[in-house]
Image 1 (cartoon, rainbow, N blue to C red):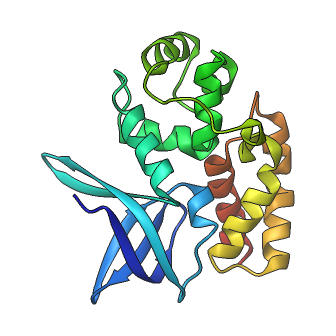
Image 2: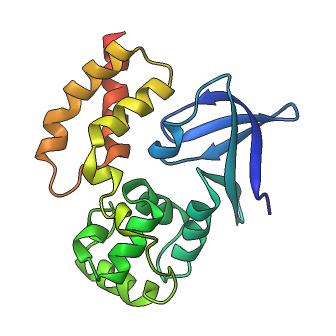
Length: 201
């Protein structure tokens, strides 16, 4: 297993970071939150989890070991694959997920694309004794609920866009975010923002 990658960030895309390790570009699937902390040309260290399938090898990257461990534990629940586990971490950081499970917060889980009411109830039962207790009260509010604008802006800056371009893109997708039911999905908003920027260029 590849526990982490460390090297220069060679490229960034909406869901992938390419990290140069010993002359090899490693494509690492990351959440918008993680991508927003990276900058092209700067050194980065990402905790990773390698998912092996018959037809593919996919490397998933995380900001820290806690996030990677949560990613692995989420997949012990039936019906949760790597993509859904990553989507859950894109909406809620590890401690917010632990709190949601500990308090049986269905609404927090249904905020994740691909999880309905029944799916949330099933996950709450299966994950109850697996994720552990939340670290503290400070993690009650997830970044997704507390400031999708800041997350989106930071992700766009991380992808190399100018501050003004990022601000205009955030403004362009604000109606979409406000029209969404529940928590705005940063990943979907990032894709919409990138489409807006591509049209403008």
